[in-house]
Length: 248
Ligand SMILES: NC(=O)c1ccc[n+]([C@@H]2O[C@H](COP(=O)([O-])OP(=O)(O)OC[C@H]3O[C@@H](n4cnc5c(N)ncnc54)[C@H](O)[C@@H]3O)[C@@H](O)[C@H]2O)c1
Ligand SMILES: CCCCC/C=C\C=C\[C@H](O)C/C=C\C/C=C\CCCC(=O)O
Image (cartoon, rainbow, N blue to C red; front, side):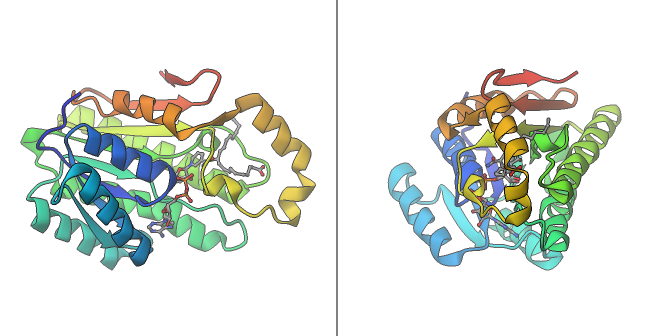
């Protein structure tokens, strides 16, 4: 799958799934705009990518996706740097049931804003791909994380509606939703607070039922998602035992 000449923008790009997406895209020839909140780690990662894939293949932009101004500016800087936008991955997300309003502004508002900015900046006639990262918790309840579940259901509903709209209007922009189960990242190691501890049994049942994806496995699925064909709405669920199947 050659992505030579394609320009991608990834939010939450310096760790976990976002970093894996970035590497897949770089390995396949794309240039990547890396958005994240941690400037020092972001600049470090750019240095790593420069030596691995060549100078000029990436740029790092400090951006908190919950800030409208920062996200607007990051899209603008990406266009100024690379001249176009073909692929967007709205990946950044957190799990924080205590500060649930912040979680809504990151996990849902950030994805909505990133998607609308993508539609605004992508060249309609040349098509484009938007991948929104939800979760299996976007398709069913995660008992220990009700607000997280709501944000991820919101990402699925918003993306499906927009995908159908894009298809009906012939916008040439494909909108995908990725719904992974548990993936072994920093996110996964988030602190278990007393609520989660009380739901330990429910949690362990889910771990047993869905298993834990390793990023390498997860990346293989990404290549399928990014195939450069503009068709109707695609969305995928991913869990270790029935890795990647297309839902309706
Ligand atoms: N790990 C899992 O089990 C799992 C399962 C399903 C879905 N997801 C989703 O996948 C996405 C990535 O998760 P991960 O496991 O790679 O997490 P992670 O914590 O390893 O990485 C998340 C990245 O996003 C960045 N980030 C956090 N808040 C941000 C903000 N406001 N603005 C910009 N960047 C921000 C972090 O700095 C980090 O680099 C999230 O949306 C998460 O909900 C994760
Ligand atoms: C179909 C029923 C929903 C099953 C949800 C399965 C996976 C969800 C993955 C989330 O996106 C990742 C969230 C948290 C992962 C880390 C630890 C907490 C596990 C959840 C808990 O403690 O109950």
